[in-house]
Length: 358
Image 1 (cartoon, helix red, strand yellow):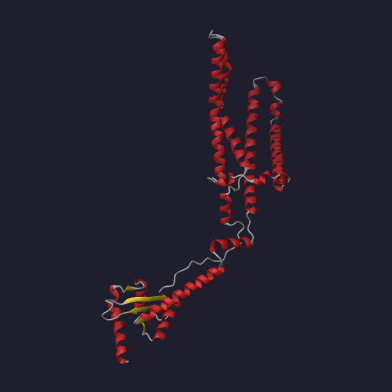
Image 2 (spheres, one colour):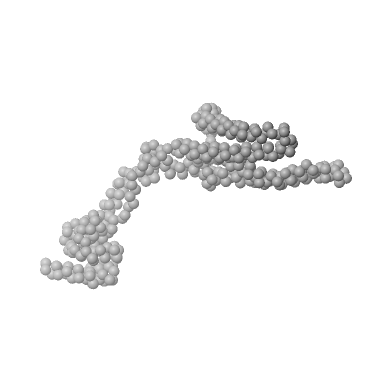
């Protein structure tokens, strides 16, 4: 009877964040996320959208401005012209804003999805009575988290201000040329300045978003840090009380040992390897058509089979090839494989000779 194999759990380390605790937090809707990532994604998407659609939007603005004159020159009544003008304005505004709104919605969804994947936590929607507690609200206002958020906002303003100052300072030479080159230079110079502002702002938002996401990830991981006691308690909850597990294992061992003892007692002979493998075989002439494997085991279990056989006076024969073949090819309480009948018959013949000698 082979001893059931058990996976070695190994030593559990005091991990900074336990996977089970992370899963529980995720079920509650608690994940590491950064508002700056979403804000940066939205601003960059709007910049890119307006940049790419600039020509179309300029044409739509031109059509919007000239729309009233179309009905004035058509010689129609004021009421009808006003109604048609309003309808035209609404149509144009929807045509201009709808792609932008759809883009903003998609980018907002994707920015959150990129941070923590698909998340649907009903528990986060449950009402919390603690949120109605004024003392909790006051504590939240003066909490360390809000102080950090304030410092982040201040840093963001300072960082963006420095970038804008550098952009304008580098463009001063071009701006001072406007009085000399006339109105024709204004679109070119201001367009170049606007391009520099947008590119530098995009760079600033990306840097801030990456830094804030890394910080939020660190803070979230730190909040979920587990003490040694928490690790032990969670392991106990997942794996069960070690004392109970030990007793259950001991009971299982005793039960298997008793079953093995009863099985070996029925056997006619034990074939060994000589110490690493032991196979207990039973054969009753006229009762069993073929020899039956009553028990088999390796190492300690093999030694236990040999001990029982010695106690019960059951013959023990050392036959390394046969012991290995029986262990690999046979099952407990099943007949031996047909290709081993001849080898087992020789063992049984040896047992019969022993009995005759006695």
